[in-house]
Amino acid sequence: MSYVYRVHLLPTSDLTLLPFLAGKFASLRLSALTVSAPAFSSTFEIESGFNAPDWIARLQRPLVHYLIAVAYVADTSLEHQSIDKGDWIGSATLIGPITKAAYTIVESGGPAPEGDDVESRWQMTAVFNAPQHRGKGIAKMLIRGALDFATHESKGRKSRTRIMIHPRNIVVKKLYEGLGFEDAGKCTLAEAYISNGDSNMLPSDGGKSDPEKYLNRLGTIMEKVSVPTI
Ligand SMILES: CC(C)(COP(=O)(O)OP(=O)(O)OC[C@H]1O[C@@H](n2cnc3c(N)ncnc32)[C@H](O)[C@@H]1OP(=O)(O)O)[C@@H](O)C(=O)NCCC(=O)NCCS
Image (cartoon, rainbow, N blue to C red; front, side, top):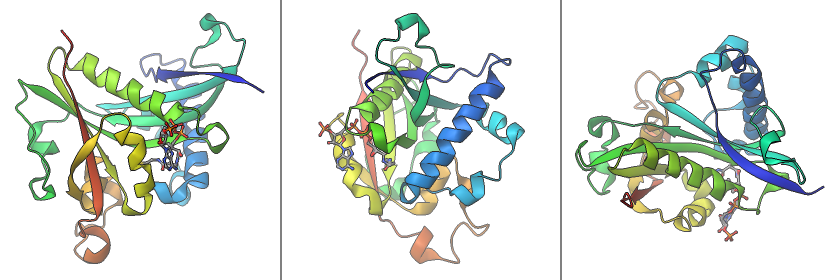
């Protein structure tokens, strides 16, 4: 079958639609945690225990935005390419805007962020595309969608978007380089959990009990700074 693909920003304001969208999101997320387990910090064991209100609450977290890639049969008209139709195949999570203080990781060795009057800051995480649709530019569409949203929300300022790549997944670096991301230092797993909104995954001592796992500076940070065109 041939498909046409579209990326949507997941809307959370329509409370009638939200339970349906949360169900679709849960299904996509659990499938991602199954087929690409090593790429994620969370696990199927944890998230398969979430109930309906948990998934709805997840979509309503403040400052967390979800880009969803949807596959439609090839001849679907534009007006029918809505988020409540088609097959959800991929997603990316964008967190922000983030304050300079919350964003800065002094020990990373990366460039210092600028002031709030000059730029807004964003963290991208959980980029995923279903295996049967890979190699068709869907991840690029999702990331561009996130960058466009960040640029729009930056209201004329620069936007700085960061991604943290786990050392065992370094092969995806090419994907981000192709979209203009550059090396911006190194992070620990503890810093990645906190920056990606997963601090609940950290042990209560912040990782001190297992420094090899949580405090080793092995993750790769990449950033893209987009400058407004006008
Ligand atoms: C990584 C992932 C999102 C790519 O999805 P995709 O839709 O196949 O990616 P695209 O088709 O948009 O690929 C864009 C570019 O990324 C690069 N790329 C993508 N996957 C790659 C891989 N596994 N190895 C090397 N390069 C890769 C290629 O350079 C490609 O550019 P090209 O087509 O010009 O050669 C997908 O493989 C996935 O979901 N993996 C599991 C989750 C994951 O690792 N997420 C990233 C977390 S940082």
